[in-house]
Image (cartoon, rainbow, N blue to C red; front, side):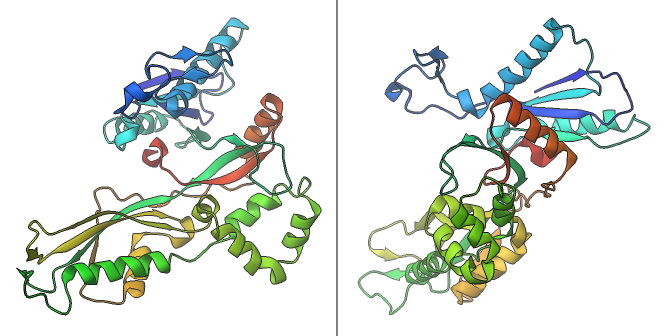
Length: 344
């Protein structure tokens, strides 16, 4: 991992930290790529082809290129210190990269007289996208001001002993587990609309008339708005804790009914659901069967991040930057994935 420091004119001003990561995910099907995944091929449309081009090499290069351009334009020092933190293992949790960088950053901040906090942390995030809001065709710059939490929940059933398949009982561990999974999928976590409504409110001057009418009359339209959002996986993921059963295991022999059936649930925790305790309590209530045991893997658990206020001063800087550079409005957004900022 790398940590660069560009000292500012005011050594006591709280620094700004720009983050990125150097590692990328594997390429198990490299032969199926249109261009070799590590070639950095640039096509006729100036599109860069390569593993990590948008996760997260573009961030690394953009930050370094911005510094080079500022230096070449005569800027020798920014007004405040800028830190550049580039982790090497973000894709596998940042436990050796950003976690170590965070300790070093905290050590440097402890030497400041006026502040022991950063003024701003800016890491990889969402994109400038089109078609996000009905009636608005222009792109919008989504600024992630909060990250969902992450929880792996191990679900096990061992209520009945193993037995031979020639004498099947009325109920099996596999059947109990299957019913639990079915109930979880049919009754997902509740919807939280406040963050989405705040994002729409930040676009109030650009909203089409029908959305303005919806926002002004939520007492009438809120159930309809909720139904529309929950109908699509993308918008549903913004409004609630997601529940996905990703691994299911049971049995080793075709003629033996297993004495253990297990599954893993992957939850991305909405900030309004606060922590894994609340999520697991909801799971237990929905499953309604004490024979189904649930346990959170605390080694991989990540609580939802603190929320950066949509009206924070730093967001005004980002809004001005997006307007100047891309001519797009800045809209607060929920990050469904997790980044190295969890360590800062």
